[in-house]
Amino acid sequence: MIPDLVVDKIDGQYRVFLNDTGVPRLRLSRTYQELARDRKKLTTENREFITSRLNSANWLIQAIEQRRQTMLKVMNFIVDRQREFFDKGIEYLKPLTLREVAEVINMHESTVSRVTNEKFVQTPRGVLPLKFFFSSALSTASGEEASARSIRAKLQKMVQEENTGDPLTDQQIVQMFQEQGIKIARRTVAKYRDQLGILPARMRKRV
Image (cartoon, rainbow, N blue to C red; front, side, top):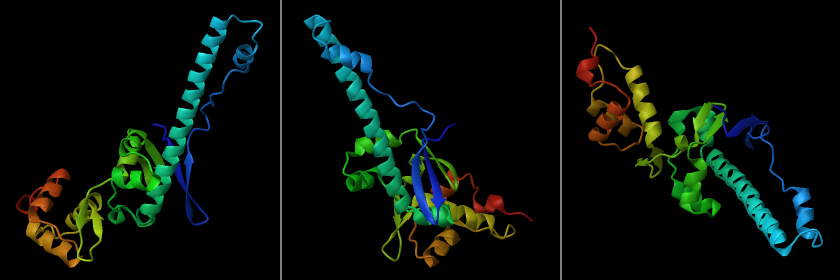
């Protein structure tokens, strides 16, 4: 899989690049442009046909370039918003919605959805789908929001570090989150635990 974008850390700053250096750039044929301008060699019908094809090709080239620029705008915003994730890891991933990005870059939400769909970015933390950065939110005691994806990462770490002889119950995990200032319901912990493939506490106990 070849990523569509690349994020590199250069001189302490994250930079975003399009990974399309090996892709040839489309250009209008100079021959057809000259033909369309030469009124003597072509009938009106042929000249109109060539002009129509040139206009269509020009529209396609502009649409591709606009898509490239939109991808750059979206990824630059993601890098700015998710700086802590790039620096520290998934537990610091912030909640982000397509609508929020669309409002900031002044584009329709459906446009942002299309340019991020099935697109991948190479980052210092691996190759990730752009959709990875979009996640729902949970409220924290400080009034900020935590990404559902980062909550799952924290939950997984809690279980990995638990005493296997006395594994954490869902309620104990809720209390640990509360101590970190994160309000989460026990049923949400159970749902995330299931999504991570983590068994209930009574089934994780090892003698």
